[in-house]
Figure 1 (tube, rainbow, N blue to C red):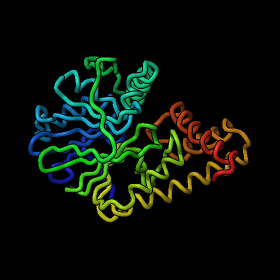
Figure 2: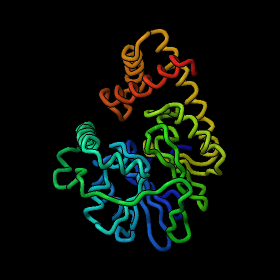
Figure 3: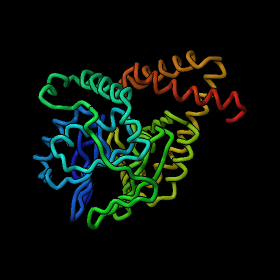
Figure 4: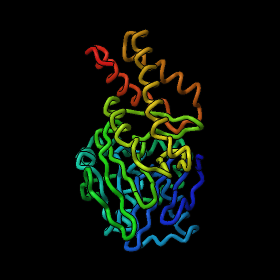
Length: 302
């Protein structure tokens, strides 16, 4: 079952934000942690939901970034400046990216695009949402355990969607937070997106398939529960295989990365006009993936 409405998922766990971009609040006895950073324009939604759901904002002591794309780090600057004691966690590679001026510029530019696309730009003028060099934190890596008191988030390195991608697994709740690395539950399908390295992306999915899961906590379009959650990673592996075959087929037929990307983007816009990414960003994403596929094919790897 797929649920896209913010609210309580189960004891200790909340889904917050909005359908297109959500984050999760994991509550422990000692402290609470926000998992993933969403897009910046959900900040007003979060503040409203804290009040509406009776969430004690002052108890939020940690925020875990699962990867450094603009739509997964957007709320971090606001919350870190609002609560300077907040411990922000990310992979070592994530912090490397978030210290690059070009990456920060991209995050801020794309965040502005998103606020305009969601028609909320005017509502954000009073919030300090920009990434700047004042945002720092700590690095986490494979097998690290983040103890909150009664619940623990284990870190799993899952590169491929991004070079800095990590996942979190909470065994007490059987909840998996794989961000876009686990596939995006759009409509009734799973969209796979191995942006930085599609082969690594598929390998990371294989790494997640044997976890005991009751909740797939995705960053876009809500969370998945029950039987579908238990089979979700296997379904994502199958979807990734099929999409790779499609990219290979289009690239072989078109003979160039640019032409293949154009066809794939055009088809996505036609079949998913309500998908949350605009053409400009989709083109960049598909360009990364097709370049990897083309290189693999040219080297005799499929």
